[in-house]
Length: 99
Image 1 (cartoon, rainbow, N blue to C red):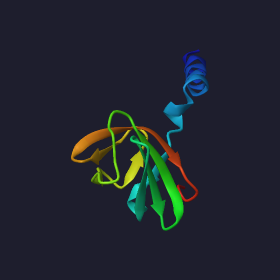
Image 2: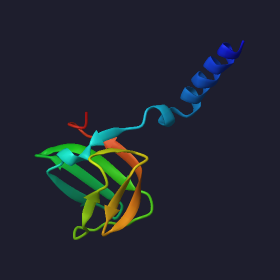
Image 3: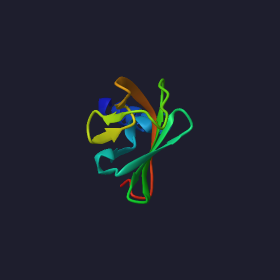
C-alpha cells in the first residue's frame, strides 16, 4: 500500500512540477564568448553556435560587466557572479550545442 502511494506521489510531482525533475544543465565552461541581450539575459556561445541562454533573477548585466562562473557545469538552480555579485539563474535554456 505504501509503495502505491509513493508511486502516485512521484507521478503527481512529475505531472504538476516537471521542472523539479527535468532542470536544464550545461557546461558553460565550454563557452568561447558571450552576448548581453537586454539587462538580465546572457547568451553563451561556443564558436558561432548558441550554447545556452541564461536569464538572471535579481541582477542586471551590461556589455562591460565581468561575468564569472561559480562552476563549469551549471543548472537552473545555480548562480553566476556578475560584477562580483552572486546572481541566481531564473532560467537556463539550452542552445544548439547545449547537450
